[in-house]
Amino acid sequence: MADNDYDPAGSTQMFRAFVEETPAPQAPGSVSTYGSSNSGRTGLIVGIAVVVIAVVGAVIWLAVK
Image (tube, rainbow, N blue to C red):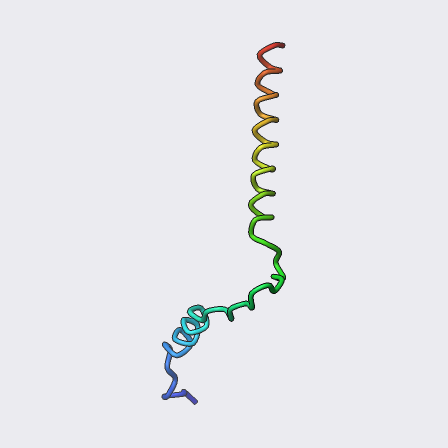
């Protein structure tokens, strides 16, 4: 038996409402469960620096060889 009252846009509307929800603000001084944003940025910078140093070292080694 077909459901004549089915709204195909209903699930889309619920999904959009879910996506557009804003996360609850954190209290000042509270610790984030994901760590600070600076630690991720620092790790990224260190990783890029290591890769750059390795590439430059490989180029110099190949040039001298």
